[in-house]
Image (cartoon, rainbow, N blue to C red; front, side, top):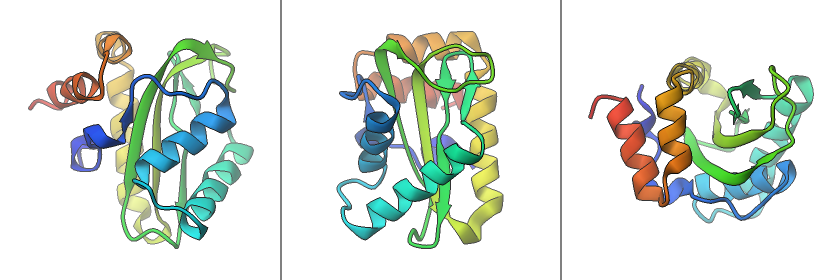
Length: 152
């Protein structure tokens, strides 16, 4: 499974308006769920927050990949974004975060959930990829960077 199978320019925020972890998580979820409000959004947010409480999702390199699984979603949703100034976030390397990928999906699709997380982790390990996304000035430019990294 590729990121572009799930990520669209409409789900990318460059830059994110929020400047703190809680606001960024909500903003990315709203983008991922494309305007879905009410119980589905709140359930997805709760799933992400519960996962964060178990083990923070800052993977290093200035990147965080918050994620969660919930029974209220029929399929995977991904949103991504950047912030101009680093945000305090619990990370493996202790560094703040500027690049975010958020993944939510159904509890019944653990295999594809792990594959998407692995795909994100492999891509963001490459410094040129991270740099390109951080320099993107629009959602379309960010998306083109992801497409090229995936060989398209």
